Length: 567
Image 1 (cartoon, rainbow, N blue to C red):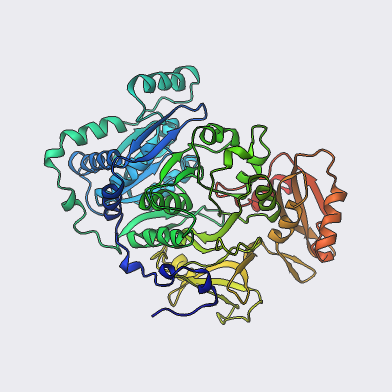
Image 2: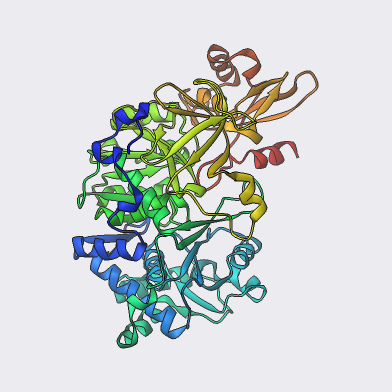
């Protein structure tokens, strides 16, 4: 039975009837099998380097490589169903092959940020009980420092230049190791991914892929996805196969009429080890037969220049800072973006000023969504037919969102409260952390810790994190609101706001601004804030800085801002 909600009017009939248990694929191996059956020799993935050098594999080749890797894990290493395999790599074909391969092996993945310190890496490997790790050779020395303190028994190294033709791979590898000297010597015993795949191929006669996954159900854990750790030590959200596929489908249903099966070319600039890119670009892209253009790093934005020049990108998901950074690039030309049909934004608040400038220059709207690791990606999204800047959209098909007070009671429409949710894409628990699980999962609802407001049409506005609220003379002030106003000023590239102690008001806002226009003054910013904000929300200090620290998902690191500037 379909429950009528005010936002249903923005859904297609298919979206209104969405039921995760009726999806054609209920596990990731089933999804890959169906994608290969439909799209076969169509290009699936391309690794593109900042120089423009690139290599591509088809859906059939992805399936073959993944099967070889699954065979290696099961037959060579002796791993079993439910064993954890970590992947610590940037966007590249090797990441995708390893991810699909461990899934075909019946193993559980855990994606690790390559920029993690050795201590952070050690925590995740131990918490997830990883028995093997696939790691980019650029950071192999990090593993050397801590592997003895973990349960990892098998190490597979991959390279950005894997899957390039032999001669080109050798040349690029020589440049990386001998000329640029960015590949450290690794002391831990390891096997190259290319060799692991070769061993898997040799044992193809011994493998039985069906047996590897015979005990995998839709509810089986597919991924231990770790939170960013900005609110404390990172926690592993246990995400099932059906949860990840449900979120990919929820995203697809929100873009009905924009994105088309078998026709999309998606620039994957957001990191695949982050849930947004993993579920909503990588997995979703495979489901619809997309061609994923994998950029190992979007920083600096000039790294994406070759991708836009060499491919007719139709699908581009970014974060606020990436959109702002691209528009500030000297090579930025609206013609390079003329084929884009869909621009999505998530991870951090999409500032209105940046979105307005992007549309003026490219003619494409940025559709903002809102979600978190704990729901495998998105929870709400702006319908293409009704994009409301400053709002993060309506609940995606199958999701339920409420705004509640501190007692867990629903607040009136238009009033602030904590955002809580139910969704078929929701995590089961935090691994090895029942206390943290109980704190956020109550009576089947996920308590986000975010403060939001929902209007009569079901559109959600995120005011801020509870912990980030600035208390000025007893009034709650949301940093996001101030940042949004400042972002609309010409010449503002980036902005972050924090609260600091104040003798008179308890706390007061301080804004840190990265500007591209040297004529922009603090008085200009203050005047703009006074025109749009109540007096107590106007920052008492404006500081111009070279950079505002953000997480890899684009969220302002307020704690670091505070430490860097106020000790």
